[in-house]
Image (tube, rainbow, N blue to C red; front, side, top):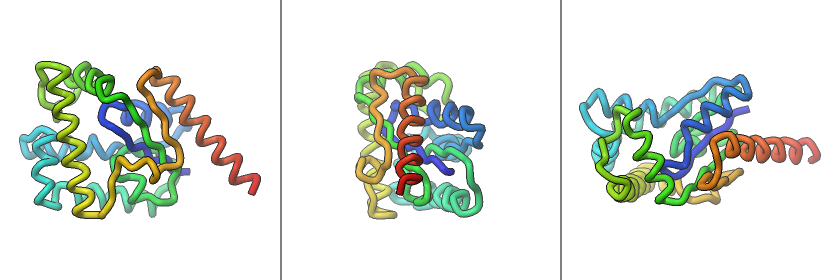
Length: 187
């Protein structure tokens, strides 16, 4: 079983993906971490790297091909990435929503743990950066693939993590996965 996790900035994609992988005893992959590493190698923040990607496909192409290959060659893993659902169509596709202000507060709190994130002065600055990041993502993915990664219709399971602890969100995702598996077995 392959599980892809996408969602809004600050919804908890990486945290939940790691926790789900641990619970299932699966491998974990993070496209955001890979892109962050690529940005660091170019001495850029992730937002600068995304902006570059609006006109330079080389910022997206390697990780897109990587996740496509993973989906074809491996099984039993969990991956977080904006377009993982698209590149691994045979996966269970999870989308995490979050209230924008709550997501911005989480990013502000955790930014010091990420070397690819700019050091923000305020939650309001994060909120503005997140809006620009989502706009850049939409622009790039529409240009390269004709797809909006934030359209919830692409996903099997949609969860709002705004009022949830990470553990509660993982429980809800696992409940949705189990329900999907049970429905398939009944068919």
